[in-house]
Length: 481
Image (cartoon, rainbow, N blue to C red; front, top):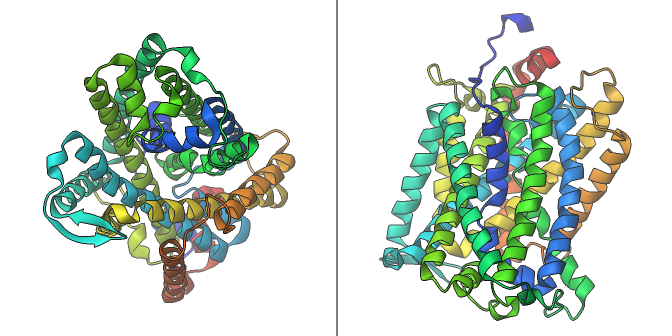
């Protein structure tokens, strides 16, 4: 039997700088929710209520992020959560975390592939051409499918040809997004009126201010999903970046996203009387149009939303392909997913698979957008739950593991993280919750995917049994085993 030193461990190119890592996480978190969901945030809680909800929700995510920062700095490996769960609990738990995480990321990727048509159709209504079928009551247009296919190929090609290309793409778009956001946020404060903020709270949907804040709070974790893209790409970080810095960037990106959402809510509510824009198709755009009396401002906001969509898409796409790569490299699933391109040193087969799944899912059109987001969010929170347990287990089993970023009050934070993610899971599974999966479409998608995971696990048994634990330790953990 060959020793682990005789194995060839597929390697990925190291080329993501600090700006790239930050942009990867921040860009994935900002997305387009601030355009599409602003109306529900304000209707349920009012401007101050929504800000409070995002602040409290952000603190919960920050606690989870601290746990991530420690394990990411200690185990800076591709696939992040796959490695943490494997070292803490072994192959089966690693597969569960990795499988749900992959589907979560690819669900968001599919959401972006559909959302891009929705944003573009606001800018260019003429693209709503040739309806060929409908899903959940929403027509699917042939032109939309071509647009989705084009952007899927673009995102796949960027990630196929090198991580530096993906990082440059992400940094450039994030800078553009920040600049465009700065323009209309400042315009809202200058040309709006702080009197528009009243009333500060709302209970329109619930009859209670506290219940209204809670309704926004249970959805907040979804808007912060994306900070966990840094752990997926940690192995590809530039060698000059200290591991402690990689962990710190997770927290910096979360804090930046908290500030971003709170600022957007405040600026939108200042730009126009918030209770007058609730019924608008795009409340955020309508508020700034009223403040500036310029339809051109709507176009700027939609272009900003398009940029945010692409940063989110690229971040989740990269992350999903890395989780597949980590599972394949460790032969937990087919080793084909764990192959590295001989020239570009990218997980090219995982990238191609991710592109294919993204496009196939996008064929369901806008009628499945909410379903993919909700199911994807549940899958990612399940992974968060697993990482919280991995964090505590690694502290107990490997107290001497080198931890460049050491989380203070580790055991307390770990328990707090478990409680926070458990509350999220309950909110997503409890039938009466506004964040709960809807029957039947969302439960069917989740059930089918869970069944596919079981089949995948069984089919991959031959691959898993083909190597010893010592070899798998090396393939997944490298020198951290």
